[in-house]
Image: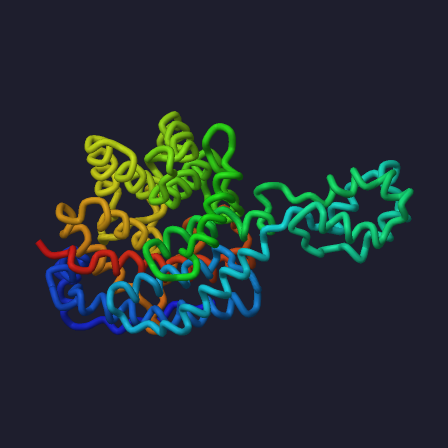
Length: 413
């Protein structure tokens, strides 16, 4: 985990602060500090951090978790699109690694010790459980594959007696990460971060499988249930997490139309669900996501309403905190300016300029941005916060880079 660096405060900053002027305004008035060139330089420095930590996650954890890998790809793809120096060979290698990892996590059956332990011995004797141990953690994409392997471990009589309970025990739930291609959050981010590119992740044979998985795990009411990150790490009620997850999933699917209609039944159900939900006005992540959602699916009046609420939720330093009354952080500020720059940049040059000033001022010497997990997560346990700090610092760095890139050419009147 990276620790904050100390900053050398220059004479101009000290003088302005002494006079009692707003620091963000003072920096925003200095066009050199928040110029597009300064933004490009800041993002370029952040790419090394995103690469180092993202590749380490791939190597050490071996999964395309929403912790790191989708944001590694998204940030570098955005940087490439804006003309920054990105190693295309490395990016292609990361894409291919992610494609293979996602495909390896589309398994219908996987038997786990934990699952076997929940089965009553009256239904599945311990002697049979012992015979099933060679199958533990082996992935199977089809029922036929699983039954073929099962037949090598159990007698014909045992198969007749216990095959049904073993199948039921080993079947992965639709939302399970190892059945859902790495999880809903990963799938959605892969669509959002690579749309319109030549990546292998946008090729029909992979992309259509992602869309099919997302359609399959949508709930009957039109929503999607969040993964661990949205559901338990964030300090918000589950209904708010459900809404945010549903809005992001719908936005990820929106560019892909069906032959029969402009919008698929999946998207129509999701929009109907969202229209019935109460707002979460004190949460800035929710507000930003709602504005992006209305830009895609709502009226001009809807966009104007959520746009104004999001602007009014700014802190005096030019950034945004995750919740009302919380200090500004890089993750939320990066996300917000990404949304504002997409939604209505012509109206928001002043807000974008001040937010860029906040981010450029708070960037660490190694190119990262810090986001204290204690400002967002539920936990108060020091060790858990330490682990989550590493994750949130990565998210903060990625969203800062992605958001700053989206503002290029949009922060001047």
